[in-house]
Image (cartoon, rainbow, N blue to C red; front, side, top):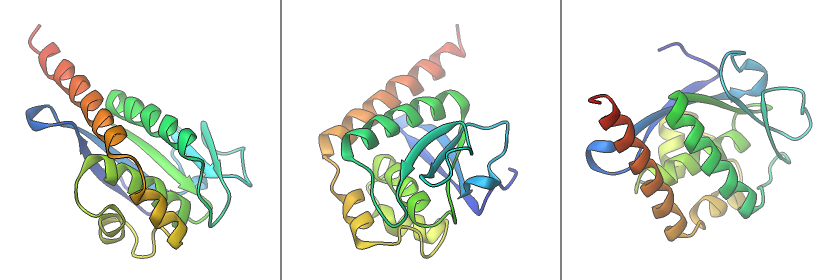
Amino acid sequence: MTKHGHGSMTFKFGYGPFKTPITVHAGPITMAPSDMLAVNLRAEAPEHGNYFFPIKDFSIPLVPQTMDLMENLLSAGINRGELYVGCAGGTGRTGLILAMFARVASDDPPVSAVRAAYKKHAVETSEQMEFVHSFPPNWIASLKSDANRAGAKRFFTRFF
């Protein structure tokens, strides 16, 4: 796999045999490949990427908009297999969104998982950490079910 940005993490969404892998490449938005869906989190530079989700540096986004973002990214990731997420330095805001992917994909502590696999200083503020851990479990379960249905559909269409 080609390395893009600072690195990447592969998350598996869904349940059982229908888990769908999505690779999320991450780093500065200016390093995003032009042929990949690139989510720009950098509020101060809207000209980069092809999906703009501005978050002020060292801050957090609004919960409803983040729910919409994650639903859209999960759907796009299932269809494309990979995407790119970036901000200015690829640490705080980028780590926050990676941690949201980890929170939905696994029961493991999401911030710890991102720091171990991506960057040890990812998710820079206590406010960002609390944001990741505060999402409603029923919303997360719903996203896993959606991913499972998409994974099952992808699995069975190979045979028909």
